[in-house]
Image 1: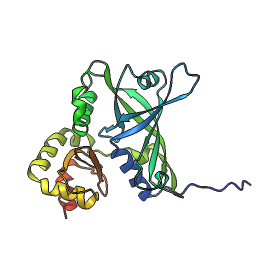
Image 2: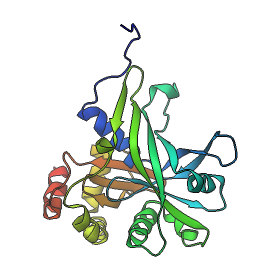
Image 3: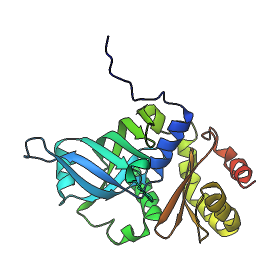
Image 4: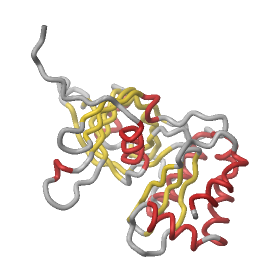
Length: 247
């Protein structure tokens, strides 16, 4: 019998929500890949992070970079999200996701969808997103490790992080119009989502993403993720959920 203590807690809904928020609300992350011809040494860099409609994180990187060459040679990667705040950085939650990287074909429907969502999230990327040497990769989660702070460690599965409902495609088709409608006609509600529900400072918050599991809200370089109480199963329920969140 092993006397080694088990430092892991049982993964519950609170841990899943925290992990999803850390991943889906990340503007940037540390990406670790295996550098080609290095003898297996990991290469770590910082990347901007976007999110596809199924909860898979996406990155936009140049084929001239070391991490692109690494991912093309070996699709295994890890993504670290979670920003340190005041005080001890180890007291703040962070998430490490082990992923498989897949390049997104430029002439695919997925590229069109991902590009639109990424540019809304990172407006400055519009300056280089269409450069021929830049491309998107989807980083499909395999498993994850959540450290919610001292004494709060959890292991999560891919299913804990992904979005899987029948409403994914229909919500993706209506996303741009729904975002325009919320930002134009319901800006007061958007501010309340950010300030009241996400504990963000007052500002000029905008919706930059809508999926079956929540909203992405941005104000300049600030990004907040608002998770729905439960994922949307039918896109016709979106209006009712947004109204309920507004209180």
